[in-house]
Each structure stands twice: as C-alpha cells, then as structure tokens.
Length: 355
Ligand code: FES
Image (tube, rainbow, N blue to C red):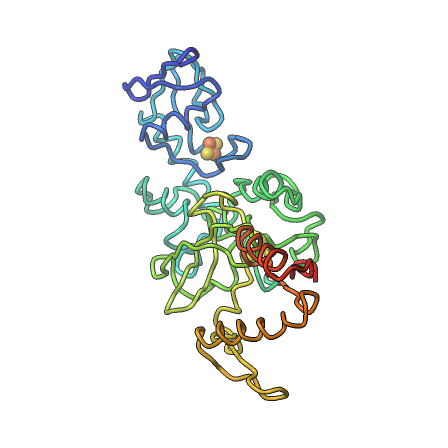
C-alpha cells in the first residue's frame, strides 16, 4: 500500500497505516499492552498511563494508546523500565480506592483486578486509602460506588461520545476528583437516560448493574447472544443468565451491527417481564362471544384467526383492519402491510409504535 508504514515492536517489524496508534498496531499483531482508560471508538485521552511503552529517541515513556505511529518507529513494550512504570500505576490505583474484591460485583470481570494479577502485586507499596465517597443507591438500575472509581473517564466518554447524552463529567480536582452528573447529583435526580453505557464500560466495580448485584458471579453466569425484542432495530445483546434467570443484559461483548454494543434503557433494563408470572406464554382464544379467554395451541390459534378473517372479509375490505407490532422486523412489517393492502384490499393498517 502506498502509505504503509513500518513499525518495529519488540524486535518484530509490522506494517501500519498512518493515524494508527502504537496500541492499535500492537493489538492487531498480538502484542499485549495493558490498558485501563482506553475505550475503542472514543477520544484517546492517555489518562491512566498504564499503557506506557519505550519509543526509541523519545525523551520519556509514551502512552501507546494516544501516540500515533510513524515510519521506522522502534517500540519496546517489555523492558524493565516499562514494566516498572506500568506496575507503579496499577499499585497507585489499587491503593487509592476501596477495592474490596470479596464483595465487589465485578470480581472476576475487573480490568484492575486482572492487572494486579498480571503484575503479580500481592499488596501495593503505598498505604491504602478509601476516598470515603458515598455510594449512589438511589435508583433501580445502576449502582455507583465511587470508592472503586479509578477516574479512567471511560464512563464520561461513553456517555458523551458514544451515547451523546452528555450527563457525566469530572468534578473537583486532585484527591477529591470524581465522576458524575452536574452538581454532584445522583443519577436519578439528573437528566440521565439510564442507557447503562457507563456501567457497561466501567473497568472496575464503580458502576454496576443493580439487578445483577449478588445475583451470580461473572464466572457463574452463562452469556447467551440474542436479538433485543423491543423494536425492529434488532440490537445484538447478551443475556447473562444464572440458575435459569436473566440477571443482566449487556451489549459490549458482542459489539456487532447494528448497535455496536450500545443499548437503550428498554433493551438494557427492561427484562423483568421475561420471568413475570402473568406473562402470556400461550395463545388465548375467546371461543364464544362474551366467553372467557382460553389457552389454545398455536395451530388452533392460526386456524381460528384464519377462519375469522374469512368471515369478516365477506362484509367487504373496509371491515378489516391490521395492527402490526414495533417488535417485528422491517421485513415482517412490510409483509404484513402488503397482506392487508394487497390481500384484504384496505389501507386500514397501522403500527403499535404510534399508539
Ligand atoms: Fe493508555 Fe490509559 S490506556 S493512558
């Protein structure tokens, strides 16, 4: 390729494109560099410095997530200097929060925990101090424990750049710095849309899904890839199930079209209906006028509605109306309106999204 660059990482030469970062080239070629604040698809802020690497002729270590490659660049990711700096960052982050893995919801699915293990840190060299920040337990969907926040800013960028809700930002400075809605408000008092993107991208247990708390550890849950049923967009989601019950919905594991991991409040949190005892699980038929609705098989329901349609259409096409569902796909709704318009001969067709 015309603009192809050559980059050497740990003695291996790789091809790269202009604009790619060191981290992107390393990852594309299977070279591990730890990251915490990096969030694919958002601004590279280089905030946590856990991804630092040595670049030949650079005056200091550079954040690989934010440094674009150049032709002939020589990068080292595993020197003692690099390892010591990365380890120091992890130790400082661990020491500056209340990272009590015993009860943390993210135990087993926490990037900070993974890095502590990766660097074989038994205890940080620094005194451990909990910031003593209050938890936000004021809503039914998202639980926040800012004592576990490492100020990586992934939630801020997910909120502002991915969902473009612009609710979260940093407040205060130094050891008092924290992330949240304006004026220190709780989520429920803010303009938060509860899309849950912040909890999905949080690398620690600072922002978690409330329904999943104490409902099953990450390694006990089974992830089932499926399609959200709330509308015709067809967002790809993962249902996290434990003991036969859905305890959480996430999008980021799949990161597929059309939603690329992002979800709305309904797709993310509206799953309680799955286990609601009053949920309809079989077709119901009112066999006699004024009679009660009775359970029926799908075959019986199809033939019953077919017969009724045949009876009604005898009175003319204007006696028929069709109401489709927003939960069907575009293709299904297209076929349905075609059936009503071309089959029944009426434009009496509508859609539940208008109701
Ligand atoms: Fe690069 Fe945080 S991941 S600075």
